[in-house]
Length: 584
Image (cartoon, rainbow, N blue to C red; front, side, top):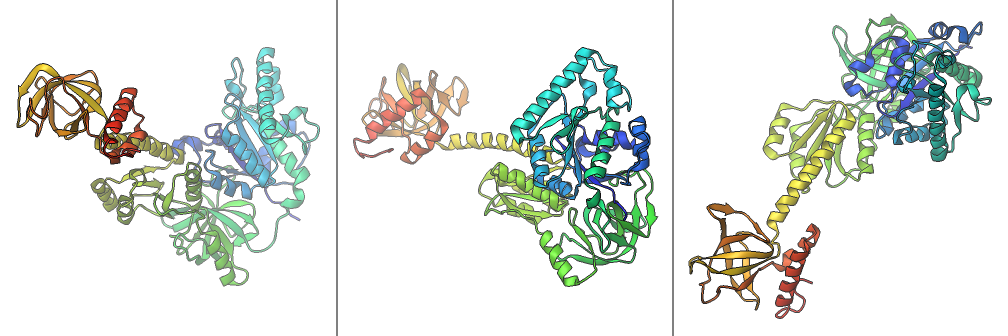
């Protein structure tokens, strides 16, 4: 029986070099064209066994393998992309966990291991960026042992120390044992670490050989090609000139043929039923998301393969959704796909609005929001609309008046309405930057709100009317004062130490300058409505700001200074002579 390609996930922390490793294998430059250098959609790369024979050369010798090659899935690496990565991981027979030997273990690394453990997916570690070890002399595409023999013993020892630290942390945090691949006797008990340079190709022959060897030895029975109707995952929906709408996908089970009736997940909810007009398969060693050469047209494709499907009415196909070839009850298949297409997110009564281009993106975003306790009010596939903006503007919490647009357009009327209503729209095609932008804005917005709240709350203050500083006796009384403690602002009431009200502050001046606030230590002129100097107030009188009782609890949130606390307590004692529990 025929054996299919093993599907290999490439996982790991952002910037640890996943796509760079695949680039070295296939000789393309996908990373340089990738948004932010980070893979946002699951992509596929077919590496034929003939290429592996060529790259591995003397490491293989005369050995032959039954597997026809390796199909790599490049999964997003930021730790919050758990849903996308799980979709990739779920398809995988094997995985490569990329770890930067300079950076070492990251939270995303540990999470990747937990995902692989949950899916019972065998994996090897690519200890990447050995070329950045101080003193390392790199050699293009050289097997690891040959390159190691060319290194200074101190540099080789440095590498071993780094690998030892990585394996120690992996064991401490996950319980898995790991060691350098050439020191392992039982690959079922110890994870192989292959030192490599994705940039120069050192160690890549060893990595490919280990993957093929593991697949041949442990997975061959699982890789026997299944006959029957094809099943797959939609990677991306594309508009192709001269063709119309097509979907890039990975077929992971069975066979799909031109003329087959298929059911595809839809962003509209109701699954799409259509017929396959054409199948285009990328040439070997090309990347399905970013092909640099034309596709080959084929009549049928069997698992496992990256394939472009051309059919009618695919405009609303859902990225990250399912594809099923119909071979039974159409209604049953549609219902199964309908259930799989539901975005599994808990919505709140109030929260942010999220728009994305794929179900995986949205679920990943929701995962991050839940982790940080950021509520989501609405989440959906498609462009940002005016209706979204109007809805966001009604949220009570100002930091919820925000819309996330991940890799989707923003309608012109939505932009205009957002400017008018003060709704913030965040747009980016790199998810982690989108979240960073929001968090930065959120911090700034909270500071602005804090300032606004401070201006609304009456703070404690204490002043004394200075001798020889009566500038006007009444209507309004204008006197020179020293601020003894706290702060004073225009519009605030003043009381004497006996609790009697003497009027409100009309204005504050320092020389020719009008002030919005005066704080402890300042000497300024104060205009006070209502009192007459020599009657209700007089020189050397001490006056307190008349803090409304309703503001007392609010003041506790601002972290009052010692002098402000003292003045507030003084005011509390004065007020309690009339009302026993004032300010309690």
